[in-house]
Image (cartoon, rainbow over all chains, first blue to last red; front, side, top):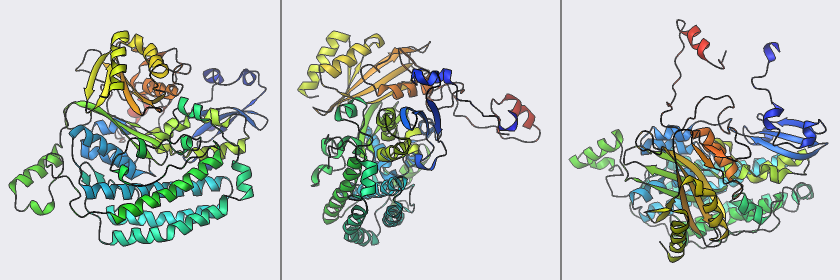
Length: 412
Length: 170
């Protein structure tokens, strides 16, 4: 009472269908973890039912980072709404941009030039590496491996510098646009990526040297947070979690987009189904991404990076001084925006966390009638009760880390 | 549309009275709401659509008469094909049977639809709000819900704003 009164008390009546009967009799303990807990990777609250130190059930409570992204996007034109997609999964802004743009391009039947396709692949794979590096650092930090965090952040900086070079922003890039890219990459881009490719394989060996056979790391990861392949399918778990359970499913292979079918790469899988298997899958994915980037750099064609379809893509600045048509197109696109044909499409890409889908529905107007982002963090977090059952509280921290959630992605 | 999808579409048209919509190569079947559980079960067990990728809803207010459509994206891991099911729901006390027994991961997705659109899922094991606070009024993604700008507080209207707020900041 008084000034420290809680805003909303946990009411056992509301949750009694989710906890065991022993909790209602007071034999087990309900423990609140989060939302301000350093190892929940954001603002995630978990209500844990504990028998001693063993987790009986875990009730995730999300929504602390809900910002109404879908509602806001409906109120903006297609170009302006793209800025919102950066803020979903802030470790994968390029991937979010791409998913949204692919949906628009599918609806508008818009072509993308070859150079833009290849640059998209390079940037997406750099994004995947940077996301996996941050994951590697933070989840190893949760398991008390401090130095990997510092090493991982060091290499991530190189990638963020490349993003700053191409788009002007380290994280909220909005660089991939409907019909191509915002503009071509600067001349320094190629050297920067080549330098990164030269140092990175050795650095990945360093991380592996610190963790893969580290006895303390193995003690904390092997056999923890198991989920079998059948449960992955039933609970719709995708991405590295699914591949660590032995299912070789990767949208870059099964439903290729942006020309992924041209590249030679493998889908790393493991059958351990536990935290360690997910770690091994992700580290291997970093190596595969490096392979893709190298192939893409070797076959980077010259040419335009934006579609020539002026109904959707603004004309280059140089044309505005000489062409009346270009001025009209520029004015129309930046005031009322473009319209898309009536209809609905669903497009999915492989984000570092799993299947990232965009369901876009147009009513023929300049704003999306309905845009739904089907986010992998939301889908994967749902399986927390399944993953944590029967483990120690200390392992809950490792399990949250292993499914690699981003709360901005989850709460939207 | 490939031959295998054609088989599914024909069967669903016959058994559940589904209506086919094809757009940009994506197959959508519009079903009556009472058929959704049987249709999902058939899709999973007989036609190998073993994963529910996404479930969401669309509000067509005020243009269309069944105001809401609930949209399910099904995916078959074995055959790598997508199928979209749509269920039109009336805006007056909207209710759809839950498909949680068929696809367990529909749990949170249906909670999100309830939270955002106010569509009830009959038989859902845990139909609480998921993204908005527990005591929130209204369902934000409905088209008649305002985008919500906060009224600026000045000294002359400060008291008035505080008296109408459920949880004032101060």
